[in-house]
Image (cartoon, one colour):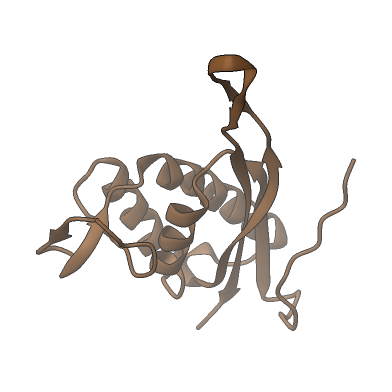
Length: 152
């Protein structure tokens, strides 16, 4: 079983809590945008935002990977509804909340200070082509880390 470390350092273990998803089949680009949208929010606000994205009531603004994306008045620029990423992050926030309750922290005062995506291994696949050739069709997996601090 592999051992993974978190990329953040310097958090007080008494007032902080962490959770992660490892090698999940999600889009690295859209995962990055959703993590950027929830970073700095309270736990309840982040959960409400992700539930609205799943229900397609609120959009996630795309800031980096935005070529050929439609502009919308809600995001004042490119945006979209990354539903699959939002569902996975909702499960991750449930895990984070359970970890906080186990540590005895107040979940109403938790603020997400770290939400980050790292690329994981690549699953190599191929499309068969004519004349015995093949074209690669790879799938990139991601690691997602979330940390929260208890604020007053």
